[in-house]
Image (cartoon, rainbow, N blue to C red; front, side):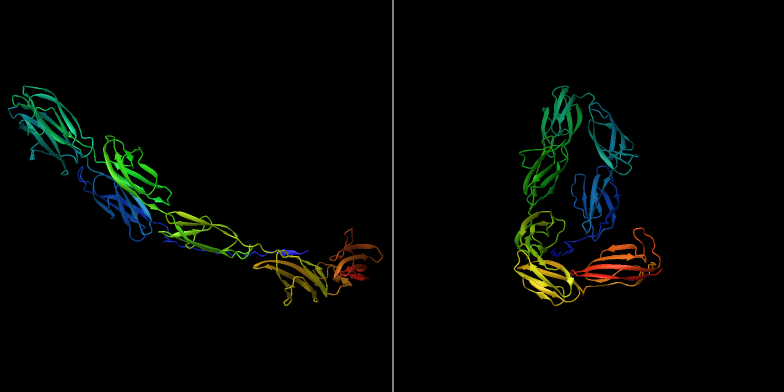
Length: 591
């Protein structure tokens, strides 16, 4: 029988790719962030924050953001001219390692006032204002009326009119308040008002109602600069209004109204560009100010939604509108880019020579605006070029990815012819020298052959061969069957022995010293050996069968130790040529 040996050669290559900048482990860390300068007075913007850090590689850069996520444009470890509020700083080093931290900058309490008023008859100077400050940095407080310092906290002898009260705390911070002294015998009235609903608009309203007094009664909302009989004043900007109601006797009653406005709506769109033409762009609006909650539109107000995040966007320009509960709106424009994937510009391949060879190649080239990687195993391993070698037959998908994660791919199939099947039959696999062996080729799918008969100089290119082995030994016969560049190999071992012979020793010493411990034939070229051992009385005490048999000095089947002495043997054998051999004689067992 012939055994086939099909050789497959596999090459394993380890490739280390370095793409872009490879950085060490990030060690950037924030050590501390502190108020290096506090806000001096409530409402001031003179605070200062400083951050300390360690572990940066190269030069660090900084980004400071306020509570509305607005970038303050400060690239420094210290941020100045800050109002009270929450701030975030992001630190980035040359390895693109980042770390961030948050701190809240405080401010002193607001200065408050508690003012007791005593009105005066309209033609006298008997009014009084008693002032008590609070908040801020605390007492002692200093008081001013219309810019003039008071010796104490009271101002007396006041006429009808509006007064500016200034309270200064122990830190030098000050706050102004408007107060008035009215006529005790003047007209009476009440007011209602509507503040401007949107920042920057002049559409507030003041209404004077329930006016009672000596006719004719006139009104002023500008501190007496002009009077009219109007009771409703529209289209007013946010401001403080000094309201005076005057009767026919000239007596006046005063009130002060402050029309406020909401903070301006501030919008900071966070943009994520579309990648790979996958409709994965997004806009997230960080908004503050205004009144109440916001609704958002990215189609110029055609439609609104409650959430600030818009996803699934393509590249393009979006006109956004942010609207608060008062229908105040802010318009803006957000532009999203669209990052395409890599574009394949060229591809080629060469098939393996044979299906049992792995020498195919693939070459593919792509272009992109950034670095690209190529992979044949779904991204498990990548390389910077599209050259792949040592490929077997099969279906290959080449994935090409840029640094943004955009991917394109191409499928290629490598085909190769099937190898032939190498087989041959032999007339003999063993025998004595000289041994003539006939080799009959039974290969399939081959057109050429190469024989190696197992010695250094015996080869042939014939289809069938006959070879004579003249020396004893073991010979590995190899036959390579080929079809173009495809090959297959079969082999067979031929065993050649010397001239058949058998002989027996005449003494053995079974003492377990590893030397001459058994009685066995010296045989060459035997296929069967039967040995029989008799004692001096002619009794059979041991028998073996087989070319590897022997007597170990014990009786069988009792297994007793045979004593030292002379024993008789009869050995029959048959050699590889079928010739019988018979030997008999005596053997001396010595202990």
